[in-house]
Image (cartoon, rainbow, N blue to C red):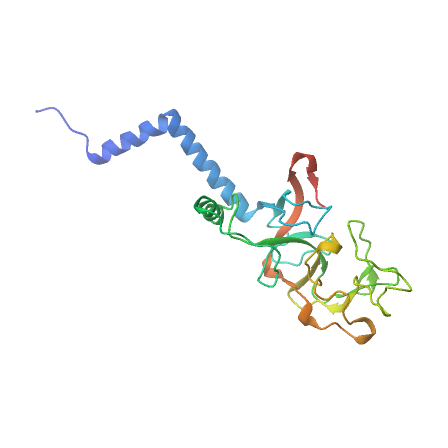
Length: 250
């Protein structure tokens, strides 16, 4: 009839969208979506939460601890010696793995791949930086300590160290202590990392311990596993869960 107008499909769709936005359900869903986007951006570029996958860093970190990792800590540079880092693991780092699981778990991992929230297909490990490019690392001094560039390290965080007995099971005689390795020169662009739980850590020198070294010269590099700098995700600076373990990581 004259004097009447009909809403176009576009106008009708816009009206329904505006009505949805004003509704309680619409507001909640939009706020949730915005929160997911913000969290995903933060975890992708700034700070990400990880779950400790093994006991190799006890008692500094326990299996299942939720840790915060600063992804901007090194900005393409070299992590300082002593930092606890998270890194993407190559095939050489055969420490556990990600099982397939059912379709729900796979969907959750794909969601984690895209958003950085929850589980993902990414395989990562947590270790402590001991040697940076160019460092000469070996174990052990006469007292059984790890030395970097000839200087013995003070490592109060070590748990379950491997046996070493001066004058008996040490590095210069026979039998050679299984604590011993090196000397090893860390290549350019690589890191040498160890676990704090030295007696139960699949780390850079795991397959080299007790082998030839010392007076025999530098250790055969075929047993070593280094971490490429580009594989370092960031610096582990805090434990947030469980609440009983809330605190900084040193």
